View 1 (cartoon, helix red, strand yellow):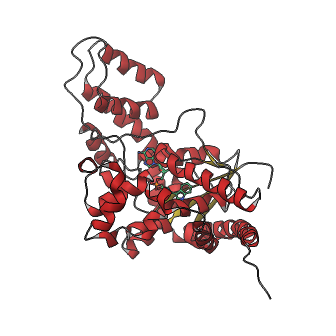
View 2 (view 1 turned 90 degrees about the vertical axis):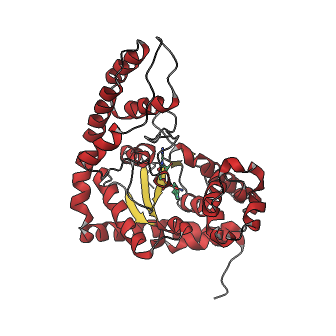
View 3 (view 1 turned 180 degrees about the vertical axis):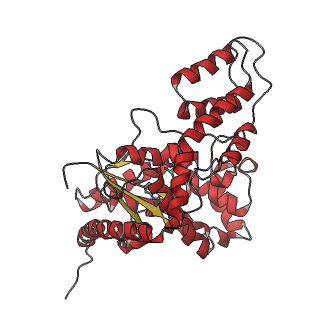
Length: 355
Ligand code: TYM
């Protein structure tokens, strides 16, 4: 293209975006726009792995596009598209699956996690390695569909079909990215070609983040029910933050911070200035901290980021004309590029026409 590296990332169409999506992915998408050749999409096919209501799925695609635009993605700078608008992805998904082992898919943490959730099996009740036996032995094993198993293949295709170099994602997606690199290497070496670059995660100098929940759990996530959404109004958001789980407070100077309170500090680090963070860290260390003050500050700082985005989401959400225009243009560009890669893949694999 223009000498810039290609960036690609996406978010599943499973509901409104939360602070985990924002700090793990979307805020990086926005910052990368100028310096890279960026493609960002809504992963509606990946959302199908959990069998959503069809009308809800359609609404979710619209709301994520509105949230992308509201957060600052500029359709003049970045290509914005919906995954299912690029049918080349589905064809290459079939082709790449011929080089993916079911064993390696079954060992993927996200598969084991989701499969257990579908079957209602708690992780700590089981021994880690028996997922195959658990699935086959379960009366409701049809709930664990083949799409869930091959989720990493589809994600790899999203990335490889655009020959992306950088894939900004949160920490939870790193295993999928590792598989993508493995599939790329395998394909290149099996056919003796240099078709796919090996993509890497990207974070501006730092480590990929894991945004914690407010309930003392490790991760903010839609299925965990512990999210602060970009679309939350001020009252809802303040209430959520003020109810965040803490502990009894430090009793002795410089005592270690408990995991639940560390979660609040992590959120503060993402949203506040270093001075504010230092103020509360010092207050913790000398036992003068009041968690109510910390939470109020945290709510103020989150709101300073989310409220302007919320306003724009509300404006855009009903604007199907703008959303349609952006997606039509994005689909054209994404398809054009994808069809070139798919033609190469077909040729390399021997899928060649006689007419
Ligand atoms: P999804 O929809 O689960 O999440 C979208 C993005 O948000 C990040 N994220 C988080 N980051 C930090 N802390 C959290 N608590 C948190 N929760 C979510 C995720 O890491 C992700 O970056 N498989 C992808 C979607 C996808 C994709 C792709 C991404 C499909 N194809 C190709 C990149 C490239 C996913 O499930 O995202």
